[in-house]
Each structure stands twice: as C-alpha cells, then as structure tokens.
Image (cartoon, rainbow, N blue to C red):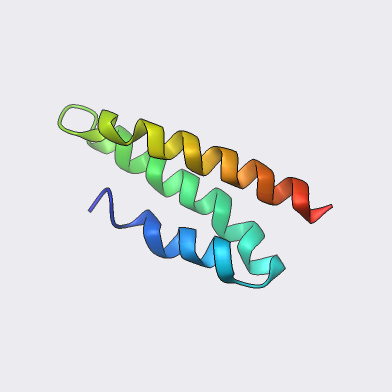
Amino acid sequence: MLAVVPVPLALVAAFAPAPVSWLAAPLAVVVLLAGIIGQVTHTGLFFVPALAAMIVATFKLWRERG
C-alpha cells in the first residue's frame, strides 16, 4: 500500500488544473511521509528517495504557480 497510495495524488498534481494540483502535491508528500513513518521498521526506508522526488516536484510546482 505504501507504494500505491500516493500515486493518485501524484497524478492529480501532475494533470489537474492549477488550484487542485497545488493542493494535491503537498498532500501526496504528507501521505508518503505518513506511510514511511508507519512502515519504518519494515520497508519504509526504501521509499525515502520517492519522498525526496515528490518534495522537489512540489517545490517546482509551487514555484511555477507565481
């Protein structure tokens, strides 16, 4: 579930109109972070690179906004 849950939010952030995508990108980061924290003892650390990529994408999206 950790790998699948942020996917719809990432798709909304990538393809939805501007106001919706601005909210979906940080929400995807939060969902991914919550999953990593919840699974840190098992496989959560494998998804830290995905979290870094999502954070960079969120910052780029917010910078495009202005």
